[in-house]
Image 1 (spheres, rainbow, N blue to C red):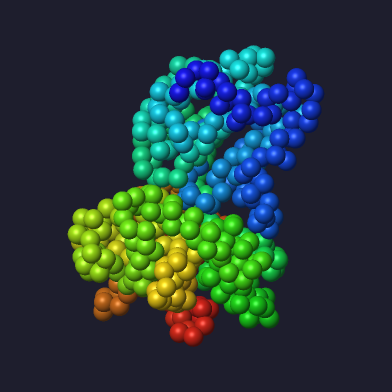
Image 2: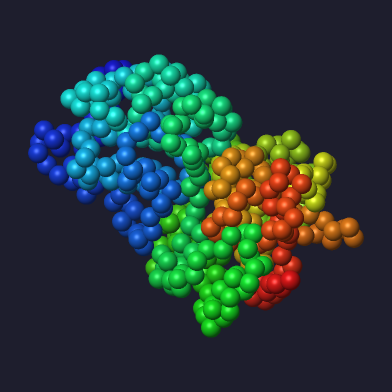
Length: 468
């Protein structure tokens, strides 16, 4: 990109820069922002708090990498993050620099940083807030940012990156982790996923009924039992809400459409199909992704036989594996390996595979006539797995991309246990289908988690759990 084009690009992307000169409200740009306008058409009031501490905290040298699936709202989160400091009296709007990087090449990054510093030179050496949107598609971006953090005052600023791919996550940890993420920053690597069921309840007005979240370790405790007793009068209402959640999923637009119209729109299903096709197999036929999502959902409750999947889809085994890994890297799927009693993977065992949101399982049925509707029992198992995975990822970042958040096991008689014993670092604030034993795990002293005994009613989507 030529320098004059880049200069115009940056000025257009940062309309708040002109507010001190024009003496206008530095947040006035939000009324005309296209992303925020589009959100307003399907807004139920949901706001992710994934970067809330950055929006309200002091400016320092912290660095954050936010990843998650497309259409989940990462760019909107960045726009909200840009608006928040604009409204603060202690920050000059020119300290906030937003850079959409999805069309950049790696050499454009340094040029954009240098030019943005020149364009905001009236604030002199004041710390800046850099917001890079969709940067993870640029090959070599972490090495370039590492160089800038090490050799320029850019290393003293607050920096946020977003991306829709887990590819290269290990390079980000290596290049941007210890020493470059900020002295006080303990959570530089974060994930934005679709709404949880609790978010869904609050957004749709069902309410969370003021029940505190329960850690996976404590789900079989007496405190958790008391919570269940308190919820007993409204379990039918929650069951109906759960079924609506399994139809709508947690993508904000899908939730709003289902709440308003009773169904997710064909337009949004088309957006999902476009995203998945582009990330998984751009050269495939238009309906191939819908067929694959349907096939994967039908195999949710059993270990995935990749060779059999490949035959059903007309792939080679290597092609099937490549597509599955791309689904995971795009944050659309989650591996669930078989684990032994110590929480280690069983070599050679077939893993299970979960789609990360119910609406992905509905994609085939919604877009291709004749494909079966998803099964609510399978949707429930997937939703529980993802709920547990996101809790463990929050407490131990990096385990999602490493495929180390959920697992299944087998008893000595060969029976399958959906959610296996799994070590976690500490109690965490969310639902999960495990409890911790007092003895601890043999893996580094972390608690050993024991599986719940649960059977699911074949008619209802509500799991009937035996607290033993």
